[in-house]
Length: 273
Image 1 (cartoon, rainbow, N blue to C red):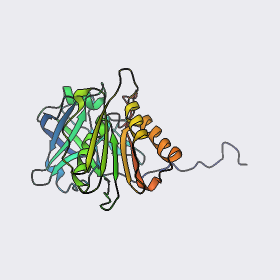
Image 2: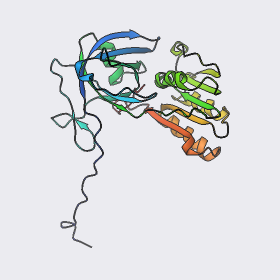
Image 3: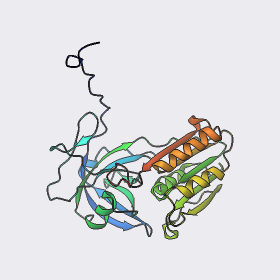
Image 4: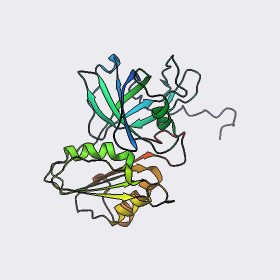
């Protein structure tokens, strides 16, 4: 065994760099529901932005505090960092709409705490406010001949669920289960001829995701059907265990994503939607 002082160190593990950040500015701020607000970003830097797939993702920079001189983070091989070495507030959100003609990009933010995205959207997001976006990330490929779909999520998953309902063929039976922390979190979802939509109110004092976990545990999983679930990270981990270990659902038939982490306001994705 080599001496501790002469033992060669393994090279730092690096990851494939994501798309660089593009400078944008807020063009509009509009409520979608009582707990969802839509931010429209625009800018010439969005030229060439790839049209996002359904349920795709973008990274959004939320400067804390907002400054007149926007500083963009750089990829260091593992994460985005600011020039001083600090971690910026970056959240991963669902791109709701992209218009290449007007170079506009819409994202929805859930007001469910005092995290970076919620605070920025409430206090700093005004027409002209500068920020930056990176993406888009890979979306979800709908299988058009699947026997059935089971969709589940909390309020952060609503933008993606709306997109999926818009592209899943209307002939495929689709069961949708959505957890809301308050009844006023419900919003209109697209019409789908074969969809059943069930809203689940989170009981007072329950951990985020408890109602969703119960709903998916009780839901029918059609043999060969597809499952798509997104929400609070610990909750979707419980859903994974139930589907894979208890019910024996084949992993390739599922897409299960942790969108945010309860109790970690500094964690990336803590307000993803």
